[in-house]
Image 1 (cartoon, one colour):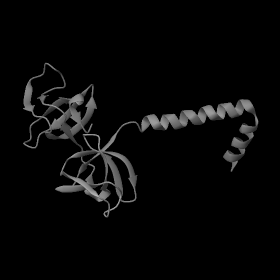
Image 2 (image 1 turned 90 degrees about the vertical axis):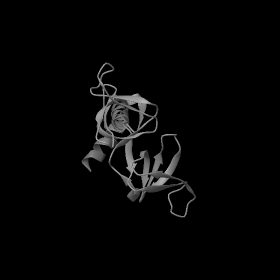
Image 3 (image 1 turned 90 degrees about the horizontal axis):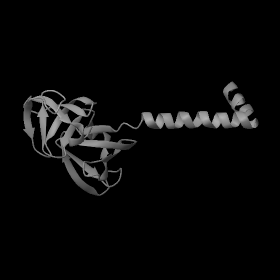
Image 4 (image 1 turned 135 degrees about the vertical axis):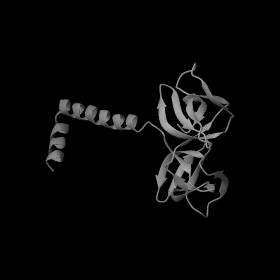
Length: 162
């Protein structure tokens, strides 16, 4: 209650009102900037159906396979609005998604032993290859692992899901 009383008092004084608005703007934009990092999930089931609306009765658009990375746009009671690598928006059931992070190669890429262009090559990867993300991007590189166990670093610009 005291906080509300202080707010009302500060709004009556034009200088305090301006100060209050500036502080509120900093708080709002600060939270928006902190939330700027994209939230990704992966398809948890062998086949995850994506719909045009948040309902099992909605039109089925297509299916993605286990591990496919999807960007979370919004969550609504048991449903998640997601964006795929092509930029298409659709809806998936929350229970069909996993917090495990995977990335999808946007183009053919070289996976290296260290995060450097001159590091030895671990393997050459083709476009649309699904890789497990081991560590978040740092200095433009993502630490990844192939399903055969080979691990290395790939340029963050070459993957979807980071």
